[in-house]
Length: 522
Image 1 (cartoon, helix red, strand yellow):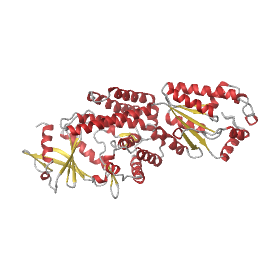
Image 2 (cartoon, one colour):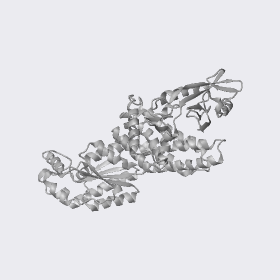
Image 3 (cartoon, rainbow, N blue to C red):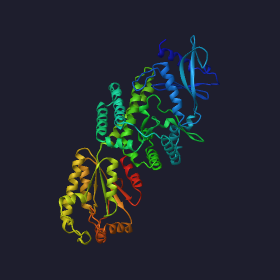
Image 4 (spheres, rainbow, N blue to C red):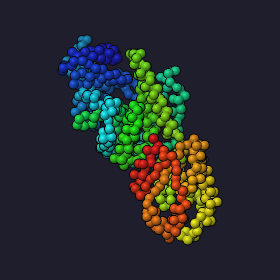
């Protein structure tokens, strides 16, 4: 008997309460593109379909047994007393039995049933998930990722190519399923922007690997797989069928849940979740690739829904709902692709010694972008620096109004070249005058780039201490304590719309500063 035919006969019998050797009033059935799940009494039985989808292969009994065993072992990492065992299914004649006499023809993962009233998906819809719950979940995942003590990929080049393979596989496997149902131009655009991002931002992925943020994760972290019980958080259904979908950047794991929450309309809670995790794990750079990973995850769901749409047993009512969700995933992928592909001008500004250059350097490293420093640019234009910065007259010589205007014009020209190449850029200068702020805002609008002003602030006492420490030192900046009051009197208040303006106290640790800045990427 062919595997698929045998499974159909088995599934028919498993829908009947009398099939089970324990009390069952009725049987609920959930079907995915790779599994049949039977909820019977206090237990759940999950059967793997005899399918080969390239990224998984369940076509033989031995393979299904192997992956059932893997599923139990891996899922016990994030659950307690849920994954019970792998149960044999036998056949005698035309009848099938759970762990009975006869020939073993199938295997099922046996689980303790969790009430759907505890699922994160249902609790979100009921308005019963709050910030405390989100914090608990972030802490649970922080502990989970921290428990993996592996050193990261042995071959970073190979690990990066796996990321590319996972992305390409999504598009290549989905393209033949598009038909006339979906916008092919949109699909192709997401694919192209994904490839471009991978080519351009390879150093970001390598740095995540070097910093050991690649771990053995969950792989399918979604609201329907998370349960907030009375005593603990249970997270089920991790990826067992393909290690390359599970061994990844923790950011890619978190992105699946964040994307799923946003898909459901809970964007604010998704942001809170990422913020809580990043704070616990001291990982502000988790934001840097988040839009890319969200796009990838939305495309995974798009592919899965497209595969399900091809099934012959999908009713017209189900098909209509499925089609609506599938289109929504494509639109969400497109939105994320816009975010990770659109250039942004980061303006780090403020008083001399406010920490803006240090912040700009760290920001450029985190984002893999160029930082253009006004002091460096000025001294390339005017190569003869003052011999005595402490006694240098204010706004004279290379710091005259004419020289400063020329310096800013050069800054803007260099920034424009970066943006025209599709890159984001950081401009590191005081921007003490409103006219220069207006100029860069106009430039961003003209180039179609986003813009964020990061105003670096510390108390005057600290500014003065930092300027005093420069006396007698050869620094790129010639600002000294003797210029402090003149700088302060001349600095025009920054009046920028709130969503384009951040105030950062640079006396805080750098990670804390980045945790306030990098969420702006989202």
